[in-house]
Image 1 (cartoon, rainbow, N blue to C red):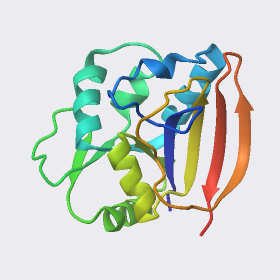
Image 2 (cartoon, rainbow, N blue to C red):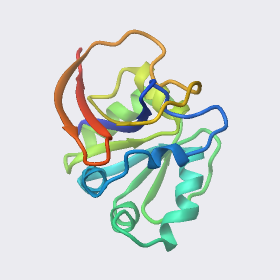
Image 3 (cartoon, one colour):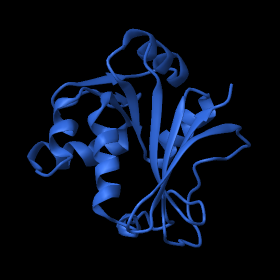
Length: 180
């Protein structure tokens, strides 16, 4: 049975997205070792899970892109959760509609090759948190303060620390498992 891993970038003050939706803050703390950690997280996934908004952005970018993320993003199957999307042109993409918790539970049972890696959008990621289906959180804390924005967690949650990695540029990866 596969586990569900959520990898998210987080600001030092706990936001996963600024109010203006920009993503340039994610470059804070960038380093080769942080990039390597992120590439390995993506490369070892058995499937990429995402909501329709994130899918639209990624499907427009990755098929023609290069670099260390291109192969795992294009070659590993994608699962898009959407009640409105009817077609997906990016290779090896499946669209899933209906109850999120039921669908993720079914995918976990069906897959045994690597973990399922959830890519946020904050709304999709928060829905996974609220549904209680995430097994592991891989949070990359960037040395930047946004001051305001969207948070991943909207209610108390107990997690168990597994490991922490400090990167050369100042970013820090914290890996937690969900406590059930």
